[in-house]
Structure formats: C-alpha cells, structure tokens
Image (cartoon, rainbow, N blue to C red; front, side, top):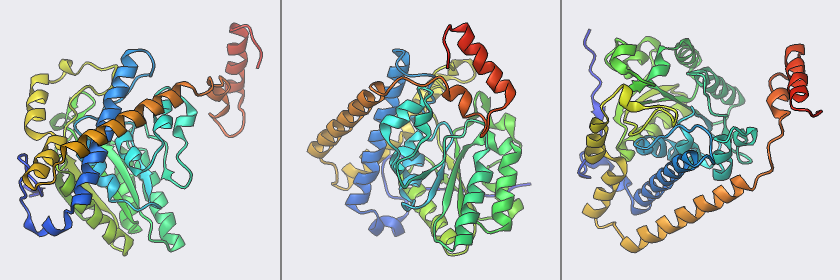
Length: 355
C-alpha cells in the first residue's frame, strides 16, 4: 500500500521561503517571538544537562534539536487551552507559561514540579508512554460539553504509536469529534529502537486514516510550518471540525536521557551532520538575516535576559525547602492502603526516626 504524505514546509534549511502565501503573516514580532523562545528553551536544556552532570539535578531528558516543534506548537495555543506533555516536552510547557524554577524542581523528583502556574492547564508530564492521549481526548470532550472554544494538545513520540492508549485516544476523539491536536514529534527513535523496527507504517500521519481524522506531516525543524499547521488544526477543532493528527519530522541531537548512551544504537556523526544541515535555530537565524530582521544588539540583550532568568530559576530551585519524605507514600492513593502504610513504617524504622 502506498500512501502519500508529503512533508509541509514554509522555510527551508537555508532560511528561504518556500510557500509565499504565508509571507504576510510572518511579521517581525512573530519571527522574533519564535527565535526568543527557541533560544530560551535551548539554553534551559543545556543548563539542565550541566546541572545533572554536577549532581544538582536528577536524570534528565534532553530535547535539543526539537525546539521548532515545541515552540511552534505551543505558541499556536490560546491561554485557556490544555497541554498534555511527555517527559521531553518541557520546552513546550515553558513556552506555554510553565514556571521555570518548578520545571527544574520536577527534574529533581519534586512533586512541586508537577504544579502548574495559576490558571494554566498543564497536565503533569506523562512518563508512561501514550497514557496522556486518552486524557487529552477527555479534557477536550469536557470543554466541548461545557460549550467553550478551548482545545487540547497531546504531545507524544513515535514509539507511543505502538501503544494501545494511542489508538484509544484517537478513537474517542474521532467518535466525539473532540477539539484536540495529537502532536507527534517523530525523532526517528523509540528510545533506542529505530522507527522502521517499531512500526511497519511508512508514516505516523497515515494512522489517522483509520479514524477518519485529518492529518499532516510537517517539517518539525521549521517553526513556521509547525506554528501555522497547528493553528489551522486548532481553528478547525474550535469550530466543530474535530481532532487532527500532526506528525512533525525532527531529531534529538543527544541521548534519550542523561542515563543513556546513544552511541550504542546510532551513529552520532549522523546527528552532527543533521545539526549542521537542519538546525531549527540556525534556520530562523538565516531567515532573519535574509529579510533584514537580524539585530545583533537585540540578540545580545535577549541572550543576557534569558541567561539571567535561568540563573534566577536555579537559585529558586536550590533554595526550595527540602522535600518531605512523606510525599513518597502519601500521594500514591487518595486514601492510605496497608501495603504503602507498612512500607512507610519500615522506612522510618530503618532510618531511626518517626513520621
């Protein structure tokens, strides 16, 4: 079976416009907003890896290389929309308005890191694969029943499409025409398994056909393509057009997590070549220079502001009160159950202290 899903693109690797109809909508303010947010989350990401190596942060999941997919999609949302991230989508949640210090806290294993800013509908990051997709469909259905124009977006990787939750989420959303975007970041690997070994389908986008759902493949390193296609899907969803599946073709440069060695399952020199040819930040930079939008003074000031923000967030994270060990036991179930209660008692006995 041959199914055609060409990759949608607005600017190419050299920063050249490939679809003129979007030119008027690509204002200077929008372009700078893209670049600022992409620099901000990349700087955050690199700092997190450094903190982990210093023992100041726990195991961390890097996303460098996927900035265009996360920023473009998150900026397409409205303030009252829902975001359902995976463990690799903190770039999207930060762009949507998550607190940076609390995001660092999450990577230190703190329950406080799962608490969004007041008024922000950000679900705690889903570590089990694909479990957030039915949740996103449900939240979108709830907004639909309330009569709002609010929508939801669920992020997931290519490996999630092999899970039952993926199909259940899409099916419910399709049946009830829920206002939700299923946003796949296809970075080519389900942890260490290449995509061709974990699915026989040629694309993720074609999986939407079974659910009679619109779908599209986009260049996930083109922030413009991601933004405008996500906006289009959201506009359709808000107006009763139901869900959309977006497959963003991208790449993570580094390891699956800081506990991973990517050289065991892929040639990292290939990753270096992709960085040189397709880097999402470099692409926007090239576009800005081609269109006389590049301002060295603005860039330097912006980088300084981002650096200061991150350093302040780290100070707040490290000044946070020490964790309460009771959190390990008290938040497992709504009401105490005897196995957890017994474990808690044994823990305190072994450590020579009482609750």
